[in-house]
Length: 546
Image (cartoon, rainbow, N blue to C red; front, top):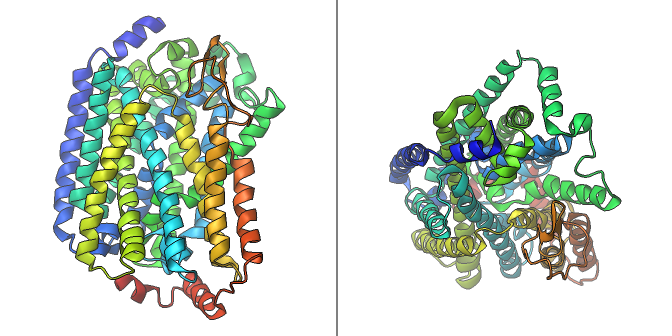
């Protein structure tokens, strides 16, 4: 089948895609309405009443984590770059071991609703909460921007809407539905949406995986051999170095990206917030174990899906289709099951975007209402009902900003937005969390230097990196692959696409320097209390009730 016919047929039945997607939205809205009946307190709105079991929360975490980029982007990366593409899956999965060993249980025992609760436990509340909230909002905003812009970009392939105004309308619709989820259901409704979405995503990917393997007699070697033959690059797609081994800079770039992915996950605020939805530290640990299993199984599926797309669809057809690398999984679905399977996969892809943006929105709104409004502006003198009202109003504003930002970013290269979110989380959030939990001398200045320093370093290096300007397209040197597509505009001086290898050590270093140069001495008694609570859970349950 030629790439032109394949690309055209893929968007030949948008009605099927829209119908299946609308059905998902109606079902999940029904779930959200049902979950909203018990939203009476701040704990209900922010943490789902802490009523979810470890398995339920683990599946929801995997739903929050497996974005459209995980499904579409990694499958496409493997289809085109083979082994190097699968390294993304490995990095994302290994990141959960960091979260399990260093973050999950300790955060659940120490905080109440947000990351700032942990950081301000033994440090000065107002400056630390302000810095943590700013970092949370920046990470959430860029993640939201990428997801919203991704919704518009996928329209051309999945729904057949190729004009810009149609894509903008889809971005607006996704934003409105997202806000409805948060306004009506809070964390409880959003969590159930994540669970449904994760189950659908794993089932859909699993069915396609079995289908691909069946075509090769469940012989992995035959599948890999066929993918190598169809790639035009031979066995290079089965060995490391095809994408990241060409130059010393590309090798260093991969190390930098790996650091950001592995360490950034344990600092992503919308992931950290999910640890508060379970009733105990034991359930927090169980939730991460379940998340590791679900995410690990899914990433094994991406290996088969990626090489299956490379073998059955081919790199030429993938590059010729709208969406290019992101079209690999949908094109494979069409090749396997025709219009109906494509419609289901299209619905799952949009459901993925919808669920992730809802989780990000509630995290950002909770951070503003709980940290900035309640604890910084009002100094804690706010009734829980009033705080929830502020959070709902904040979600309206955040939703509107995400819609406008997504519209402006539509059609741009948004990969740098995701990289920026992970880089900020790894550079600003994680160093501060770890030093606050494990270093007795760590003080307020160290926390502020670490968060603001890591944040600004990541922002500056990304702004002057090739992902913003000056990254030529190897197939057409007259065009750029960066956000600024005009090849005549090039102001980058930082050579790497991701700043993690520089900004993460700077985040730790600034935290250490800020602490050691400050005359402030943090309370040893407060640190001892935090250490006992974080490691044993003693006193944590009473704190979460207030």
